[in-house]
Length: 573
Image 1 (cartoon, one colour):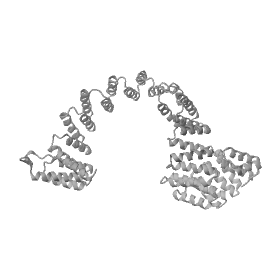
Image 2 (spheres, helix red, strand yellow):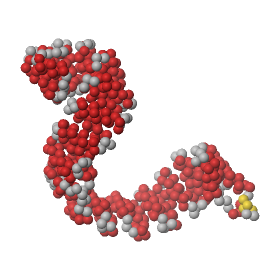
Image 3 (tube, rainbow, N blue to C red):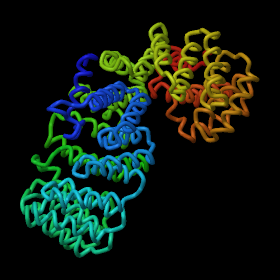
Image 4 (cartoon, rainbow, N blue to C red):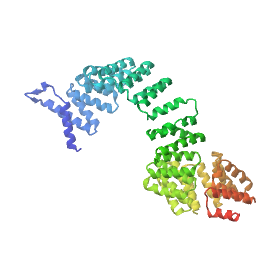
């Protein structure tokens, strides 16, 4: 809107709000004094519109000095002071405007708002009592009057206001909900129930109102009344999943969660019940199964997910749910397959892509990891984790020419996300090490430690890199000791501890560290398995060494050096 149009609107507003008294006219004309006052009002309004509130305030005050009966100027001053949170002055001028023009409902409403700002709820309620009296057909005034009465502690009077309004407009949801809440607040459960019953009787086919009533009965510990209400809902809508799920949970209160899930078959087998409702019902159980590693619950959930597969075929969210549950039950390869199906059916859910990347990495399916991260780059060019996983995939394939640039791009995209930046820098440091660039490796780890001094995972990676090169082994040992003190029992750190001692040729002390690492989960870490095999070879236990090298190979670590060790039954470093 250009300046001339704004000025025109301000000028028009001046004529609409500013009404000189009849005595100001002489032979149908305004006096020169009133014309100047009108011009001053328009000028003040212009500055207010342009955001210059100080100048607008100055001019409105000047106008009010010239004409102490100017209600419009007082009203505008009240609004300006309210915008500036000067509630004392806002109240002063709002009162003045309402007094000068007591028949103006907008002045009164604004005055009530300013009373509220000053916590004067009693005075605000009195304003709306006047407004209801002068405009009994305006519903808004009743709601505001009741609101201020409640704030003033006059709950009984607020209920009477709602009853008066109900007698005028009839029963409706808004009124019934408010009265129900107020009755609960004063501890009158019987009248609270009556309000919901009146609502359901007025609209007998509205299941939303019946759900309100059933929920109230459950809140009041009236299970039989709640069940009867849920059954009534199912008579109206046999496919109401919310009612069915509620009844199922009430019918098996003593059953464990796995047993409860087994009761859900009928609703899951019903294709008319909304798929999202079914999934929402079991998501909390899936989260709990993942957090507690409850395999019995996970298997029961997987069985329900299989039903969804049959009843709702070709749904990406069902594929993703199956993927989650298969992963929880340790079926990573099958989970990976379901995540692939999910992203092929619907590529818009980024979290599913990230799960696909994570499991591809865990299962050492680096070809899949590279393929899907390359595809995701076109869809999510601003997601640092896509580049991170892409870089890891290439590096695991020993393609550092492609892997390192992706990790560098990921590091650039982390921005102010320091934890993610540390994670990326740690992997980038390892990539430089594997690519034979020791200088950049050390620089990257030093940068990570500057951002997060003493970070145990950074110390672990840096120590591992130095040990692998056989350099600065005393420094490597010091760093891995620090890391272990911070995260005792961490398999990765314990394996690195053993590796540093191994590189120092301290085989006797290295042995228990590797054994601890394997006991704490390192038996799925191909690198730890290979290094333990190396240690066993140095202790002349060739058969055991080859066995652990083979275990490393079985974990997907298909390096030519490892394969040669197994084939020749000989250590190559």
